[in-house]
Every structure is written in structure tokens, then in C-alpha cells.
Length: 368
Image (spheres, rainbow, N blue to C red):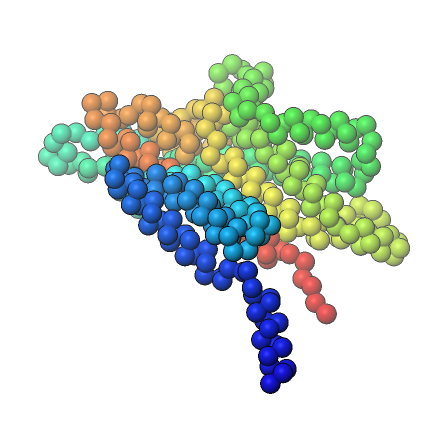
């Protein structure tokens, strides 16, 4: 009996002045109910309800914890509540954008929308059925092909340059003047506005091919200016975390440095490198300003990046809003723009998911 009483007293000492695990959930439920009741008096609003409920939850959670657990634990719960609140606030714009694009773009999304272009499309007319036109004609096939080709060539240009630069900085630079200068200019390039990259590419090809030259390859060069610093930085960080012991073991076996880099360092860091490259592609695939300046926009299919103007998804969205196919009835163009925005968001999300998948597949295998 004495032992049992002692165990019980120890348990009560450990749990004394401590809120149960369900207490924060109860406080959150109470905050939701009270905030809804208060807003019902002045006019209910979903966003106002969420903000007021969050404020009441943080205040009530701190007050309850202060009364039961003391000032130190209350301060800890207050900081935790602020952290989760900041996370939720950061999610609100993302969820809002996705919901808005999904709600407005799903109506114009169809197989025909993905497989047709805008050649000869005039928009919706009043007697669409009598004229033999569907309520929504035209699609983004030409813009999808243009986005794919321009991004592909931008990747072909950027990935080798970025990876080789990162290898030099980590393996050969050793903090010298040239490596410090490269690091400085890479940092500067990271903050370059996208329109400046477009103007640079347009000016470069104006010197090479003549003024006014626009083609998909010009847009690819503009995007590569934006991709290179991202590839350099991500690859550099991944190469830095490769243990020096692996390099030293290869050197001890008489393996040359370049072969050590190719056979040991890069395979070890390939997971992070591939993930960084995929994120860099996702970062530039939605750029609009440089592509308008460099690649222009057309309503027909063009699969040659070295000749003539080329459409892209961002430019398609921009021109559908700015220049609707039917000025008297811009609704079809607006619907196409929302549907194209939905496709673009899906592509970016797939690229980010692909980056995580690549990181998992190519991660170094550990075993006993």
C-alpha cells in the first residue's frame, strides 16, 4: 500500500499545474464559437471570423495557461501559438489563390482546350449555335508547346553552366579572388528583375540577328539568366555538404581529382542537385515579362525556337486579359485566361512534387 501511495503521489506531482492535452483544442473551439457570435451581431464574414478567432485563441490560451501553469509555461504556449498562427497566415494567400484559380478556371478546362490553338478564333458571338461555334473556342496547345520548348532550352543552357560554376566554387576556387567575384555576381544575379533579363536577351540578339528579332531561343536565354544563379546556389550548397572524408578516401586510392568529382562527389550530391534544378525550372516557367519582350506571342503552333515568334502560357494569359478575342464580349477570353492559369499552377505543383520525388529516388542509400 505504501508503494502504491508513493507512486500515485509522484504521478500527481508530475501532472500538477499542467493543462491536459485537450485543453488547446477546447480553447480553439471556444474561440471559434465566441468569434462567430460576436461577428453575427455586426455582420458575419469568413475572413474576419478567422482573424478574430485566431486573436481570441492566442489570448485565451495564454490566459488559461498563466492561471494554471504559471508565467513561464504561459510564455511558451504564447510563442507556440504565434508560430502556428504565422504558419496559418502564410497558408491563407496560397489556399486563396489556388481556390480562386480552381473555381474560375475549371469551367474552361477541357481536352479540346489542351489540344487546340487560337488560330482563327474570334470569341463567342451572340448567335454562336447558329454560326456553328461552340460556347468556348480555342485552346492553349501552342502555348503549352512554346512553354515546354522555351523552358527546355533554358534548362539546356543553365544546368551545365550552373553546375560547372558550383563545382569550381566548391572544388577549385578555395576562396580565391575569382571565386569571391563569382559568388558576388551570382548574388547580384539572384536579385535581377525578370524584365531586365528579358531586355538583356533582346539586346544581345539585336546585336547578333538584328533589331526586333524575337524567337523562342531569345526567351530561353532570358530565362537562363534567371535560372543560372538558382542552379549555382543550390548545387553549391549540395556539394558543400558532401563529407571531405569521401574525397580523401578517393585521393588515397590514387583517383584523380576530376574523376573523384565525377564518380564520388556528384553522385553523392545528385539528389539535392536534381531537386534544386527542378525548383529552378518551376521558378522560371511562370515568368511573363521576359517572354513578352523576347518571344512575343502568336495564335498558331510554332515548334521552332530559332525562328519566328512563339507563344507561352504566361504570355497567353496576359494577352487574353489585355486583348480579348471579342472586345464586345470578353467573357470567353477571361475564361481562357483562368483555365490557362489553372494549367500553369498545376505544372508548377507537379514540378515541385517532382523535385521531392527526385530527391527521394536519388538520395544516397544507407545500409548496415
